[in-house]
Length: 126
Image 1 (spheres, rainbow, N blue to C red):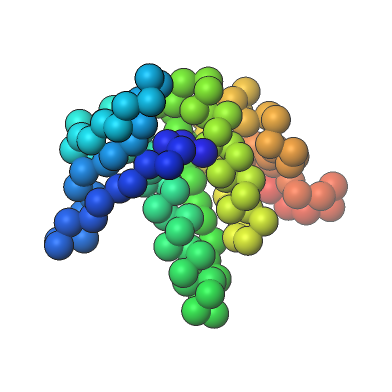
Image 2 (cartoon, one colour):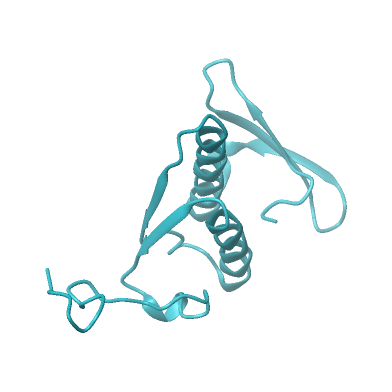
């Protein structure tokens, strides 16, 4: 979804190396991962965390994924694609998303809560 048909090469130190992808014109481009924008690196990092959570889940160790103001460096098109990635991950994992920008996340299909807001009428605030 983020970089269709792209390949990320991992170095022998297990860090991201070269990223190969097709340009808009259909030409294969290869560049260093560190040359990507902060937002693109953040998006790939989030996808990597979801992949790691999938590995843990398959090993019988499900995880809670906590995102704190994730993806604030995304443009609208990439944010839309990343929301699809998050929704997909949420079918397999519990995902908790904290944000200072609730207007960006109102279309996720879940009720938003404000910290300190009671979960039910008889619940106590914390």
